[in-house]
Every structure is written in structure tokens, then in C-alpha cells.
Amino acid sequence: MTTILIKNAEIVTMNRKNEIMNGDILIENDRITAIGPDLDPTQVDKIIDAANRTVIPGFVQTHIHLCQTIFRGKGDDLELMDWLKKRIWPLEASHDEESIYYSALLGIGELIQSGTTTIVDMETVHHTDFAFQAIASSGIRALSGKVMMDKGDEVPFALQEKTAESLQQSVDLLEKWNGHDDGRIQYAFSPRFVISCTEELLREVRSLSEQYQVKVHTHASENLGEIEIVQAETGMRNVVYLDHLGLANERLILAHCVWLDDEEKRIIHERGVHVSHCPGSNLKLASGIAETPELLKLDISVSLGADGAPCNNNLDMFNEMRLAALIQKPIHGPTAMNAQTVFRMATIGGARAVGMEKEIGSIEVGKKADLAILDLNNFHTYPSFDVDPISRIVYSATRADVETTIINGRIVMENRIMRTIDKDIVLPEANRSIKRLLQRANLR
Image (cartoon, rainbow, N blue to C red; front, side, top):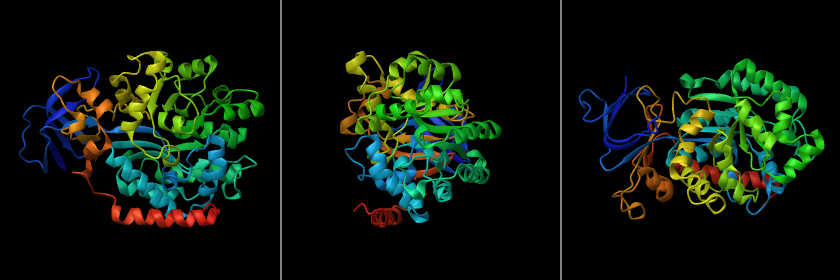
């Protein structure tokens, strides 16, 4: 048994009482076993002195594309459909095993450095096993799956799938990786969006999700042009169509949901569908501003995600929290989307979306030890006297303030030094990979 004792910390628990306390945290193997003042430091393997530090639950990002991390800077200043057709799909079609692997490690390194401990990841059509290998070696907690695309005339040939093959490859990956490392890695069926999926595929995904009791992760209602295409093809809006196929349930995670009508909001609420709000991506792709305050008032499960590096340029939850709060205030007033609300979306709200609110998302005895330790002793976070700690985190802190990240009881970054990913290898390999892909896609 491995034991870690975090001493003398300010602890932002995010428990039901929203308690913030000063004290110690004892971790035994992958679990938090004690929280309180002056815990016994004898017979522990490692002591972390967290005096003048703040410990928070690790962030849970519910919409990420690790396969796109090496496309950072290659899709700037485009709206969604042009972004996909002109840049992202050609680059995804050019991926090989090594480029997928190093793209995933590049993204995971950034996520861990900024305090994210759990992600919901959507890969591309091919080579997804190599993304899972990167996830496994890095130590991050993840729900991931290969993207499914069996429809679309403008899709590059290399991304065009046959329905049966897409389904079989997904099941093969699920049976290999779902539950890996005592459940740290889980599988999620990942049909890209309605435009690129046949009705047959989506109906089979519904059945397989029920059979295996795993999540379905897809995009919906991100862009007005996308919605027009869906309506023209199906006669229904996105969420209504997904509900018609039986996919709208508590296992469904919908990324974006910028443009929902009242009927779609009702379906999402009644069926227990989870929404992943991605403010940075929605702004950069000029998609719009989601009606997040209204969704929360309807008691809809809303969490946060950075999306992908080429539509956001970073995977930083601090950035997403700040944007999620600020973009609503000119419309709904200064008290809308306060710091407590967006911090909850980034932690226990994300845990709820992935069905793990009893395991992660807050610092409580019995839960998994997924934590980030912040050093908020700097010019940009002071004065600290009589300032709400969550306000400091949401409105003042940055990812550079994350000092140590612990996932599943394992220290994956300590004092800003990565323990599970070799930066000196990943960065040059990422450059070599994108150079190769740009040449292959004829996009240089």
C-alpha cells in the first residue's frame, strides 16, 4: 500500500456543504482515507508540505479531442463547417499511429499541467488504440472512443467508414480498454455528429450503449449551418432526432448545445442528458454563446470542456471557467454564472456527467484521490485577505499556479515536473508529426 499525506493545506472540498477548511489529507493507494487537522505523519510513504497552498478537486473536462492537439494553430479564424472541411478532416485523415500517440501525449501533458485529472475524449476514425496507449501510460483518467463517421460526401476518403466496420472496431476497442486499470479508463461510443452518421449507425450505438452500459459522446447544435443541414436531412432538430432514435438518456453527453429551442431543452432535462459547455471553442469558431444560465435553472447537468487545440488553442480549464462566467454577465447581469457556479461545473458537475460523482469531483473521505495543489502566492492572486478562495481560483488564478497533480492516488506532476510524460521527447515528436501530416494532406 502506498500512502501520501498532504499537510497544512487550504482545502476546497466541493462537498455538499461546500466546506473550505485548513488541514491535512491522507491518501492510501487510490483513495482519500482521512481529512482533518494534524493527521499522524508516521508510517506514511510520502509527505507533501502544502502550507500556504490550496488543494482542489482535479478538474473534469467533458469534451476534448486529443487527436487534434498537434493541429494547434492550423485551424484559426474559420467557422465550424469550413474548419472541418478545409483543415481538420484532411489532417485527421492523414494521421498515423505515431502522430496519434504523440498528439495525445501532448494534450495530456497540457491537461495535467493545468490541473485536469479526468477527460471525455473523442478520437478520430483510425489508430485510436494508440491514443488509449498514451492515456494508459500518462495516468490520466479518461472516457474515450474512436470517432464514428459512416456518412458524408465531403468527408475525405480515409475517414469514410462502412457502418458495420465502424461498429465492430468500436466494440473491439471497448472490449480491450473499458475498465482498464481498475476503471481509470472507460470507453465511450463517439459518433461525430448527426451530419456524419447514418440512422442505422446511431440506432446501433444506442443499443450497444445500453448493452455495455457505457456513455455516448457526440456533438449537437453547435452551429446554425449544422442545424440547417440536420433539419433538411431528418426533418427534425438535433436533440429531437437523437431522442427519436432513443439516444437521449442519462448516458448521453452532448458537446456544445449552443442553439437549443424549448423542445430540445425539455428533452434534455426530462431524459437526464448531460451538456458539455465549451465557451472558448464556441467563441473562436464564432458559433455563438450557449444559454447556460437558463440550462442550469432548468436543472440540466452542465459541465465544461476546452474542446480541441485547433478550435481553442489551449486545453486550460482556468480559461474555460473564466470565459463561462464572463460571457454571460453582459446579458444576464453581474451575478449570473458566479465563481461558485462555474467551479462546480468544472469539478463535481463534470463528475456527474461521467457518472462518477460518488468517486471524483470533490475532496471527501472514500473518494478517489484526484487532486490539484495550487500555489496562489503571487502578484496576480494577492491580496488574499478576506477574499473568497473560489473567487481567487476562478477569476485570478492561471494554469501556471498548478504545482502538483495527483490522479488515482498517483503523483503525475510534482513541483511542475511531469512524472509520466517526457516533455523532451513529446515536443520534438509533435513537431515531426505535424510536419508529416501537413505534407500528406497537402496543406503546407
